Length: 229
Image (tube, rainbow, N blue to C red; front, side):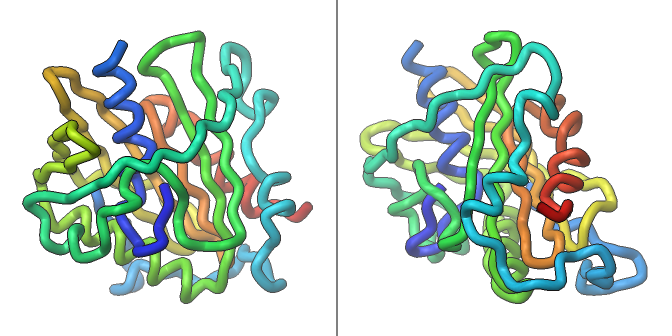
């Protein structure tokens, strides 16, 4: 999910998943004591942003997930032209990078897993580091743009993908959190992806994939992202 022009957070991973299937919401969870959804960074790292190498050490691994998980090889970047149709707020963020890539933060690390060889059972984690203000503004803007449209289309090359979004609650984790459930439909095939993003100080943990797997591992992902290395 690359963001040279800041596009939708989940579109890269999820669009790739639904296109693969064809070939073979967002909401910020708010703290009731804070209108902005922020809490005190009591447990956040106090040093500066982490390096990519340091973030990589905080990623989930097979030992964290348990039996039945296989790490996926990193996929090559996709370069299809992408156009967002029917969602002006999302289109204004830029559609060129919606299929494939990462958030536009230079410090990042990513890992993906399949579960029990299931074609629809996948989970991925991305970690990013920057100042709290940079992370909050960048991720919040993307989720809010996606939440502004309950349904829209993404043209990926010559393939039209219909996307529907649903706001979902997020466990009370970290300092800020966002959640969404997206359904991607193309050529009669659908793929549902849940995505949860949690900011812990100067680190954002983004867990995406099968809803059950995201729910099962997001707490551990956030705890590991917070832990000292």
